[in-house]
Image (cartoon, rainbow, N blue to C red):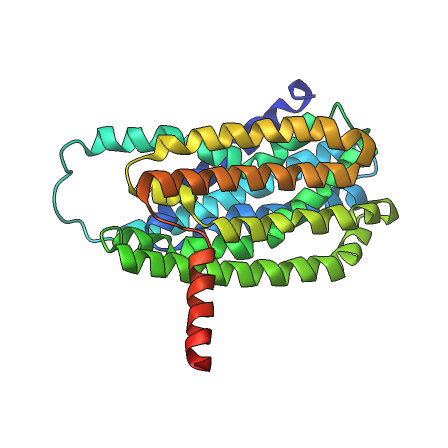
Length: 323
């Protein structure tokens, strides 16, 4: 399959690599929306558009057309984002010299974050590969569409943390200010996650119907997948806090644990429950992954980056008002 479409696959791989580099740099330059729009909003929309074009415009060989439209379209998105990045870089004043040991420090952070980015951004792609031996092609296609729709709506939660990420690094030495900023971000992310959960529960079947009546069976699993958004918002940005405390490598055991849970949960839940089992396995893996990260951050840094401190603060303020 890859050999037959090697040109399109190679083009898509280069575009994806460029987008990942662009996104990381744009977030660091305090332009998070420009950094995340390409992958979390434009790529899912492009996949839907490419599927429609390939189906309607090309009667023969629609898959070939789909692959090339997707690869070509995403390459244009990557180049457009790169031009935006160049404009942003030119606006940064060039002052000071490169600090001693900065290159070595960069590599110490880069290697763990490559694994973090791959496991996070490609979580459902890895999951689909694992499920390929447990589901028939039609069911796998339904779950694949569910994951892409989920990736599209999850942008709202990711955007919250992207906006506050540079400010969190600015407050690295201010413990109280950092916890306050994290608490506010978690609260906003939780509110957005809850709204998206009900939005998908109500309108998910309509969205899936656009792909055909057979895809409506993914409405409940897609709603279950959205529970992972609330899980992420509750446990907070643990991996970022560990990196801020010069411990990026300590994220890796939690990732390994989460992926192991995904494999085992798929084997146990998918055969009896099908699509719903796959969704429950993904939620369980994400929950274990996030909880392990939160516990690691709490143990290593002494910071509770979950939503609970903010909830406790709001409840205490409410009780104080009553008294």
